[in-house]
Image 1 (cartoon, rainbow, N blue to C red):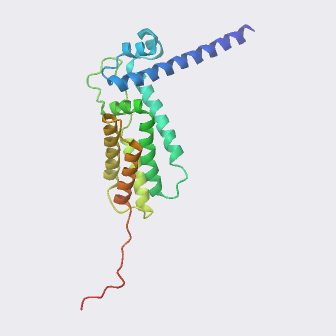
Image 2: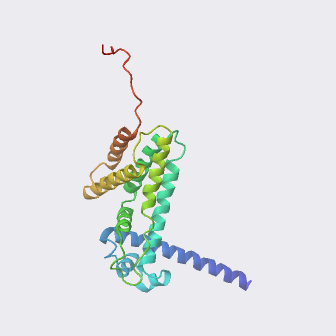
Length: 220
């Protein structure tokens, strides 16, 4: 009987600890979005969460681990969005359109995540204090997976010949620029902007079959 009560108590503690960790991560995302990573101190995160700095350090080794956990959570949610929206498309061309819409849509629906992702993309770790540094992950993985998609479109004859790596970076850069513009001017219709990107890159990448003018007269 006593052992069952002890086990139940341990499970309750684990549930409470996980809930507290999740709360801290959510507040860290909000603070980083508002102040940037460098100014998002543990004191500020603790104040937002309504706890002491010591409570954060009970659950995490430092700010670095907090943001790594936040990034993992964000990337997992973004991956789930891709998995849902990129499934069951009949060709690579429509899959690329879905990719752009999914990424733009995720940013539109999760504006506080945008700054965290941007901070990770530009993080160099140079001036981080002990416990503050974090692993930003493989930023190039995003463009490599997109380049692989573009190469698949080329192999299928849907896309023209081009350097897939360069075009993947161009697409990603265009999306980032649109998101940055939206943050500066929140009244921007981000959904419409995403559709313009879809149209622009579709026209730029799709292979156009050669045409023949059957009515022309050969030169004499």
